[in-house]
Amino acid sequence: MTAQLNPRGDVAVLVPAAGAGLRLGPGAPKALRLLDGEPLLVHAVRRIAAAPSVRLIVIAAPAAELDAVRALLDPIAPVTVVAGGAERQQSVAKALAAVPGGIAIVLVHDAARALTPPELIESVAAAVRGGLPAVIPVLPVVDTVKEVGPGEIVLGTVDRAALRIVQTPQGFRHDVLAAAHAAGGDALTDDAGLVEKAGVEVTCVPGSELAMKITRPLDLILAEALLRVP
Ligand code: CTP
Ligand code: MG
Image (cartoon, rainbow, N blue to C red; front, side, top):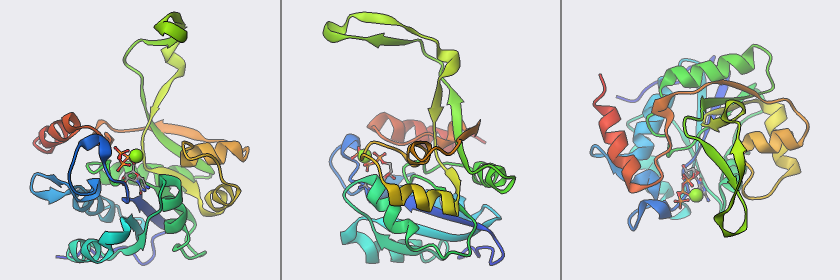
């Protein structure tokens, strides 16, 4: 049955899903690859739609798959589907353009983080609602990190206590994200990076192991296992 979104919710979630998934190996665009028999995008949208403050979901889909994506998500939740761009940042900008001004909070999420729990979506949104302009979910770094120079010579050991692994959804006041995207940045900058460049403070909140990004074939195997966690 199609989930209902909350018509009084104050959150729009943008879901860039237009990537090819090159690192996953040959096959369909990543958002349409199957995990336990269902496309990653279906897993992702089902969890977003279960977050009670979400009013609008905008998917940036591969341009050749717009109708397929609409048909796929029709039984899951009401969504707006737009064509993505050549880079993730362009896909986000195109999805952002579909959000009406009356929605105060915009979350930017990756379809590739297909198992992100609704609770993380709510906690990021709540932090923005509580007055923070920009919020990112993070995990601590567990490995030792080295800085290296030419010839793979170690220059030093980085203090990992000051480092964080960044996940999505990243949450923003709508006006803050819109201004940051209008100012632009290079293709490697994430949404929080654009906002940082604009001089806005970005705050970390606890992320979730379940919000792992499915990037390589091993990640699909790990995600299958995570689905079995009770
Ligand atoms: N994405 C997008 N538009 C692009 C590139 C990426 O909407 N032009 C989306 C992907 O669909 C994904 C998210 O951004 O949900 C994170 O990107 P990534 O994990 O790098 O996915 P892909 O770009 O598909 O994978 P790869 O880099 O291995 O090709
Ligand atoms: Mg990519």
